[in-house]
Amino acid sequence: MTTEWHIKRDRFDKSRAPAIIRELWQGDPASLRPISQDYNIVFRFEIGGRGHYLRVCHPVLHPLPKARAVMRFLRFLASERVPVGQPIPSVNGAYIEMLEGGYYASAQREAPGTSMERHLLDLSVYEAWGRSLGQLHAASRRYQPAPRSEYEFPSVQQFWGNIEATAVAQKPAMQRVYAELTAYMHSLPRRDYGLIHGDYRPGNVIWDGATARTIDFDEPNYHWYIADVSRALLELYDQPLAARRRYREEFMRGYLSEHRIDEWWVTQLPFFAQHRAMLMRMWDIQEGGGGSGLREWGMNRVGW
Image 1: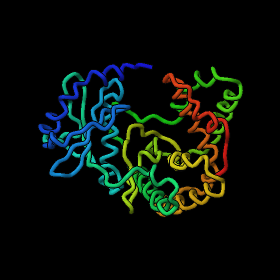
Image 2: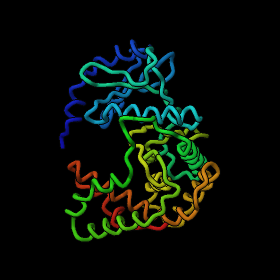
Image 3: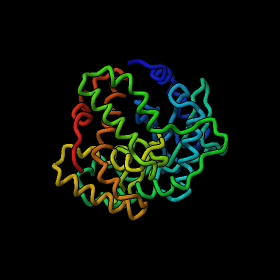
Image 4: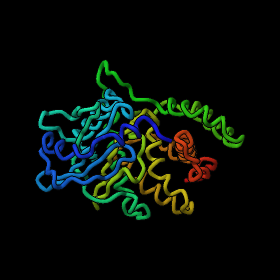
């Protein structure tokens, strides 16, 4: 399905990128190479031989007040020594630079290492991975949004309400699961709830052999902290239950060493995994896809 963002994305003149990195970030134009444009438009470039990323976006995808709020949160996490992709200012001292045509750009240092997707079945990385997320959540508890901000981070309840029309248009079995999960979320206590990464999948974590570094802060939202844990572990869905539990135990050992939450939440992982899978499936359908790859995940509640 073609959206207004797809149109704006495809209209961006990529030949402008070398000048943007040279003039605004003193980067080497010869090092520039495109990385992706599935979501943001992303280029890799170098400053003094060190890797960086340029991200170009437009308000039709992320309104400027949202982009500024996300950048403020990311800068706070970096200042708290949370392992995240380090944003860097332009030569003008701005972390978000406006470009012609309404586009805007930001840059950050390249996180060393490889995607956690490549290490998903390596049990030895899980304690450090959990520790990294625990540091992020512990810092998030201390974060104070800007007063009188034009943008407020959404809550998971808003996301869930936004898929209701799509969910109730599906087959009765899926309608029933949606209703069950809606009732479940309404029953939860509002403790251990705060601002989370929001898309804490392995592809958004970089492993350098010692540290798990979080990148791609596009959708922070208010949710129970265990939801980020659930998203990290969701990719292990097809592993045997005994293996899933070993991974979970190692992850939570690291996590709880940095951020204390009620360990009761661990027993709720099956619900949170199913909840996230249902959200992902409905988003896929709303964007014109079939969501078939997520059907089983959303319909079944598996043990952890």
